[in-house]
Image (cartoon, rainbow, N blue to C red):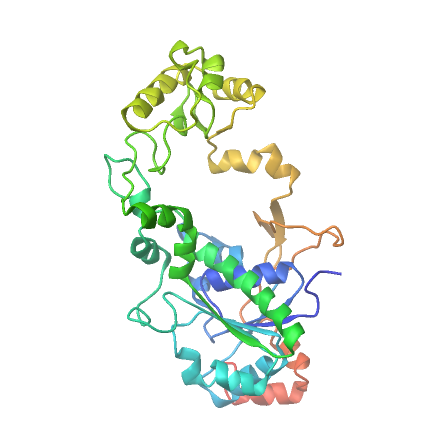
Length: 393
């Protein structure tokens, strides 16, 4: 039995943070009812690298396994009626519209709490449900900029550099997941549901908790390194180094230990793991000079033999072939809508009491209409009547 088996989630979310969260809940056994507009959620028509697998957006496939789809026109009274019936049966509702959208449709927290007092209702927004930015569009890059993340990345000689993937979206998805689970525990203790708010901006700020704590203590904006991209606070040896056939990274280590492997006499008495300023730059250059002459695999083995924190820099093709990635089973085959399979990243956690489950394919738009209507106790005849009235668009 899976940990969340029997839990029903009404998933109104689109794009990344909401669908990532509901995919995690689905991986753990919850029944995810993906409620989509008649033309489908946004990611069905947007694909990273404009890549589609047999007509299906690679981005949609990435975030929507283990879900059941029903397409509803929420501006149609019959479609809204079905949505309300789903919410009345659900344990959890997750949505990431701009503030006020579901309220205007009659699916806001107060309306749904009257339908289902046990409901755990989670809203994910760009900036929160109130305040001067509440009506602004919320998107990962925009949030990174407002939170100052690019000012901590890149070399001093270049421009501020955003993180090159949807880091804030993904982290917000994790906040949604754990807060929903906490809400369910609270419901079990108190007998009533709750409302949860998660914002991209708050998620970005929690990513910066260490950096912001340092700034608040010193009021000093950290200056990006001239030699270590993405590390304004840390000095040598931490950084990225070129080798004869690639790159490696070193973390915080005793420079004396590194000097034994790289045979650098000048560093044999240098025990600090964090040397900044001009001396840090000089040390980085000394390390770089020696590492540029060494093969990646050979020098990694030599450093690890001394328990020095290091790793090769791998491109995505190398990541897929990495033996530890394979050992953990992190690349999974998932059924593809319409047949066949595609490969993706599987769940990050496992339970000793759970057998390895076989994920279900991301749904075709509206594929599970009859399943959902049956779950609500609606007959086939009445389902067809709802369809005739435009409930499904």
